[in-house]
Structures are given as C-alpha cells and as structure tokens.
Image (tube, rainbow, N blue to C red; front, side):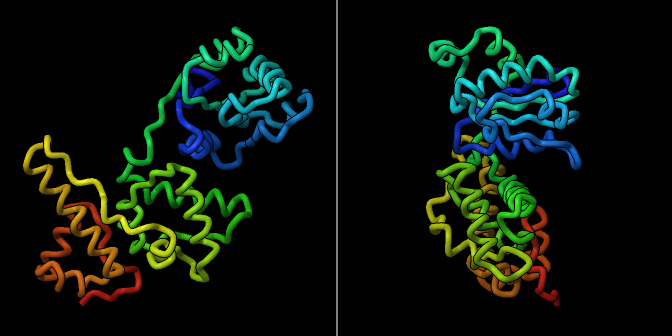
Length: 264
C-alpha cells in the first residue's frame, strides 16, 4: 500500500489503533514526526531532518489552520525528502471541504484510503497488538520494558474492548506500571478489566463444525483465564487427560500452560 503513494489515509475513529498502524510504516531507525507537536510555521530545516522518515498527523480534523498550511507545505516535498505521510479521518473529504479545507490538499490526502477494522474484529490479534502497545509505550519512556505473559492472552481475547484502541492502551499502561514482574500477568489485567462473562457467542449461521470449534475456544479460554493457565487444574475441570488437553489446545491455537509451569 505504501509503495503506491507517499500519502496514506487511515479510515478510522479516534478510539481506533490508527497510531499503531501508522507506526508499522516507521521501520527501525526511520525518523518519525508527530505533526500535532508543531504549532508554528514548519521550516525546511525541520523537514530536511526528517529525510526518509514518516510524518504522522493523527485525525486531520483536529489540525489547526496553521497545521493545515504546514501539511500542504510538507506534502509538496515528500518525494524530495523520500518521506511518507500517514493521516487518519473517520469519514470522506466532504465534511472537510465544508470546513474550508483546500480542495487540492484534500485530493492528495485521500489518494489512498485504508479502512482499519475495529478491535472487535481482531480478536485473534489482540495479544499481538497488546505486545506492540507495550513496546511503543516503553520506547516512549512511559513504562518500563514489559512482556506479556501467556496466561494473560485468553483474558485479552475474551474482553469486549468497547473502548477500542484507547482502552487497550490505557489498560496495558496501567498494568505495566502496576506490576513489578518482567511480564504483565493475568492478575494485573483481571484487576483492570471487568469479567468478560458476556463474551460474544459463536455465530449461529456458520457450519456446525466451525461453531463447535468457536465454542470450544471460548470454553477453554474462559477456564484457562480462571485457572491462571494451570494445566493440571484445567485438565481436572474439563475432564480431559493432559495429553488430550494439550492436543486440543494446540488444535484451537491456544497457548499451552504458564511459562513457569513444569509439565509432567
């Protein structure tokens, strides 16, 4: 997507993970400019220092008139700077036109529009996103470097995340600051998240085999979270031999046991 245009518009709301998606374009060592931190006229020297990097604006509807002028100035120089511009907005350009935005600038900003899914649509990726959040927060100096314990993954997957990406960032920041361990454990998250007892049930319109697999995944996620990833207690509660339990969890793509647990 980035190879087709130096300007990418992320179609997402303010509570989405647009910031995280934008940072995926900033490869290690690549310069990054948060456009919202510049309130006066941008200079050529500031842009030159960004050569080969990424400019990120966040939701463009929040930009001031001066920042809009800075944006137009930067867009005209992206090619020469070998830089990328990543912006976001939840709607089309019509509302911005009514607000007085320059038509030529809007045409360039909406050249490539990439819709982003909600967290609810990415249940299988929540743990990976949470790890990315922890890394970005640590890189920004907001938290100590923390990993994510395997026992915490089912709880993250079960949670509804009605607050979107903003809720995920808040929860991971709070959990990382509250723990003294190297990893964020399930107990730290359980204290911050309401029980996910109303997790979405498998869709009834899908084939029986798919629905059964979805139910089994929810079932084992629920009890793995409840037992803190302890395989012995999980085997007793589910009525499966541990060998069969491991096979079932692997089939469902679920983590097996706690890192500190020794298998018999």
